[in-house]
Each structure stands twice: as C-alpha cells, then as structure tokens.
Length: 383
Image 1 (cartoon, rainbow, N blue to C red):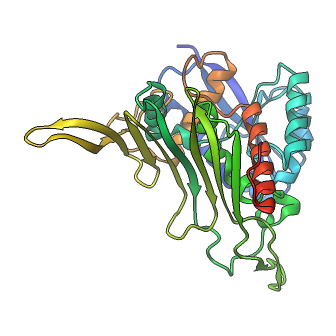
Image 2: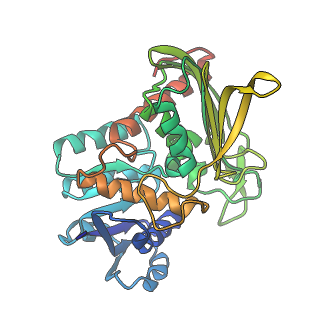
Image 3: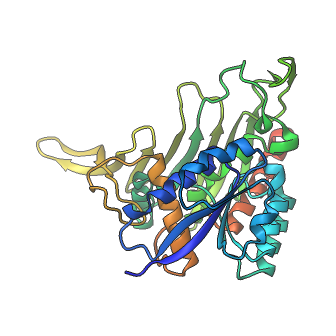
C-alpha cells in the first residue's frame, strides 16, 4: 500500500521526546499502516538536549524557539512534551498555526487552561489534536477493554485503574518542576499521572458522578538541585479517588490510584473490573498475563469460581510483524499510540481504540478539582 508521508516535529527533547523519536524509527514494524511519519525537526530550549537527535538522519532542523517550527509549512504534526505551566500557550499557538498536535498530559496546568485549549481546537477544526496516554495500548490492556465491551462482566460490581511508581521514594532526590505547584499544578500527581488512570475508564463511559479524594504530600521538602539546601516540595505525591460511576446504567464503585511513592513499583499500570458473570485483571508488571474470572464446571468437583490466566502476546491496536507469541513492552505501546493517532488523523482508525480525546483530557481536570475539594472538605464532591 502507498503510505502518505507525514512530517513530524518534537517540542521538548527530553525522555518522552526521545521515546517518540525512537518509535518513529521502528515504523516498518507496522503492517499496512496508511501513514509513514518522518521526524524532521526538534525544538528544546537547552541546545545540549538536541545533540541526541544528530543520530537520526531525517532530522534537518534543530531549534531553540518553537515559533520556528510553527512557521515551517513542511511540518504537519507536532508532538509537544513540556512543563505543565507551558502547555496552554504552546498548544494554543500550535493549534492556531494549523498544526496537528499529539499533546502530553495533563493538557494544561489546570481546568481553565484545558478549557482554553479545547476552545482553540473548536475554533480551528483543521487542527487534529489528541492527548498522549500510551499505557492502554499494551496488548493485555486491549484484551481487557475488549472483554468488557463484549458484555462478559454481566452486572458490574466494581473496577479499579491505577498508575504506580516509586520514583520519589528517594528523599535525597533533588527538587524538580514536577514537585512544585507553580510548574506542575495544584493537582500534583494527578496532573502528572492521572490521565493514565482515567483514559480507559472514560473511554468505557465510566465518568465519575460523585467522588471522594484521599491525597498525600509525603515528602514536604527536597534538596535544591543547585544549592543542596532544603526547599518546599508542595505537590501531592499520592492520590486515591473513590468514585461512583455507571456501567450499563448500573452504579458501581470505581477506584483510581495515582502514586509517585508506592514502594516496589517501577512504572506500573493496573486495571481490573469484576461483575456477576465475569472479571478481568491486567498489570504491566506482568505484561503477558491477563486474568479472566469465570464460574465453570470442574470434572469431579462441580461448579467452581476460577481465575484463569491468558497470555496476551504482542498484537495490539495495529498489527505488527512481531510474532504473536512474543512479549510486548513500553516502547511497543508508544508505537501503537502513534499508529492509532496517525490513522485517526486520516479518518482510517475505524473501530480501533484511539488516543485520549481533548474532551476526555479536559474532563480529568474537573475530576482532579473535585478530588481536591473532597480532600479539603472531607465530603463527597461532584466533578
């Protein structure tokens, strides 16, 4: 099939910018994808961060001012990964320039910023915008989503989605922007990790109707990266949201967990849902294993409740050349997210699972605001 060439530029040459660049280089692993992305430009305010991209032959432009990319008519799509307080201006400028955007979470530092970004999208319908959230593209996560969509749960009992790591368990780790409200936002860890825990629930229609927030600021001071002196670390480290949502018009408890300090976790996405007829569990800590709950007749015993394990393999939203029995990992989920984004941009995603919508990203801020109000008041709140 003839692939349409789409020129991509990255704003923010840090960890995720490099991950995206690496994923684009693996594009031939996808089978019959209608688009071929080509990374042509990178922007970062730190010139040293741009040096890594010298190894990519297609990169012909490296700049420190993102406006240079907005003026470049050859660029079709921007991936933007910058500090939360910079989202609103950069995203709106990119949208107004007519660029398509895959934007990092939380899609603005707060609710007002997210709403302003959505308003810019509405005013510029030719700009195709989605929000980055890759964890749901693991094959095991997709199996769980498809299982629920099939109706196998029956009457739902409860569900949980979590994103957990322990990156901040080291109290000597220097203070950075993600640990300061002025840069990260008052929602703290929810801004940082929340969309990972909400992408699938919102896509399934599980929008919290009432919720109770339990928030923790565990490490209140960290050493300055420049002086070593202790400075205030004022963001929420951990957040748990206990909510009521609906599935097939049946109300059920939905738990959402976002934790920077969860001892033993590296970078774990977990999802589970159980009902009267079935259940499903998946965790990226064991990426091939998906647990399915059934009640089955066991020879010589009778009917028993059984959690059985299915191995998910490598295939996700878009087929790849990778053997179906092989394992999948984080880099594969990034590739799948981009495959979904670019196919969706061409109107060719069909019924495949897609990236987080701007409306879903904006909704997360309403949920975070309600969680903060609940924590402060000790009462249920409505997003």
